[in-house]
Amino acid sequence: MKLLKFLLVGILFGIVMTKSEAISWFRIQEMFRFQSFHMYGIIGVAVVMGALLHFLIKKYDVKNIFGDVIQIKDKPKTYKASFFGGTIFGLGWAMTGACPGPLYVLVGHGYLIILIIIMSALVGTFVYGALKSKLPH
Amino acid sequence: MIEFISQPWHWSISGAMLFLVMLLLIYLGQKFGVSSSFQAMCSIGGAGKRFEYFNYDWKKHDWLLVFVLGSIIGGVIASTFLASPEPVQISTATINDLSALGITYPKTSIEGAGFLPIDVFNFEALKTLKGLILIVGGGFLIGFGTRYGGGCTSGHAITGLSNLQLPSLIAVVGFFIGGLLMTHLLFPIIFSL
Image (cartoon, rainbow over all chains, first blue to last red; front, side):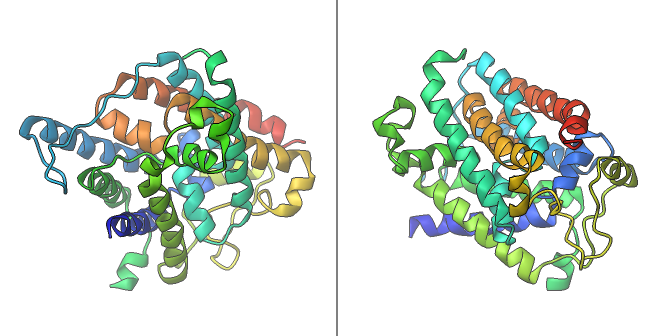
C-alpha cells in the first residue's frame, strides 16, 4: 500500500523530532537567544547533506521509487510573500516554540493544548486563503 | 539498543536523521514540507467552495496527511518507549533569561520533559490574556505566515535552502526577524500581562 510508506516515514520523523529535542519550546528559545549551537547544528547538517543530495540528483538524473527521474521544482519567486509571510511565521514560531512538524509530534506526546494551536493555525490558513488576492506577493 | 536510542541525540546525528526523512520523501516521489497540510485540511473542511486557494484536489496531499498522522504516532512511540532519562538540557543562560520572564524549567523528568512550559501552555491559561495571545495568537500566526510565505522550517529552511532557493533564503531571514522580534522585544511585554 502506497500510503503506508508515508505513515512509516512520518513515524520516523516523530521520533527524530523528539530525540533531536527540536520539539522543545525551550530549545527554540535557546536558538532565538543564540545561547546554544544545538538547533543551528541540526538544521545546518540537514541543509549541507541536502545540498549535496540536490547536487547529485541534478547531476546524475537519479530516479525515484517509480523509476522516474527526480525533478525538484523551484520555489515560486514571490519574494514579498516569502519575506512578509516568513516574518509572520517567525513571530508565531517563537511564541509557540514549535513549527508545524513539531506541533503534530507534540500532540502524540499528549500535550492536548497543542490542538488549540493547530486549530488556530487552520483559522490563520483560512484567513490567508480569504485575503490572498489582496496581499503583496 | 532501546536504551542507546533513548539518550538525547547529538545535533549531528539529529541533522543526519532529519536529512534521511527528506531523502525518503523525495525517493517516494514527494517533497518535505509540512505546512501544506493546513491548506489540505481547510480544503477538506469545504473552504474551497468560498476561496480559490482551497479549491484544489486535496488528494494530492493525501500522503502528507498520512505523514502527519505518522508523526503523531511517532510522538506517542517516542514518549512511551524512548523517553530521555533527564529533561532537555538547555543552557543555563536560557534558563536564567526565562526565569526573569517567570517561566520555570523542569529540573527532573518527573517535573516535565522540558518540551513545553506547561505553566504557560494549558487549557486554564486560555482564560488569561497572556495565554490567549501565546496559544491562539501564536497558532494563528503560524498558519497565516507559513501559507503566505509558502513554507515553514521543513519546506524553506531545509528543503529550500539545500536546493539553493532564493525565496527560501528570504523566508528564513524573515523567520529570524520575526523570532528575534518576538523573543527580545515582545516577550517582555506579553509575559508581564
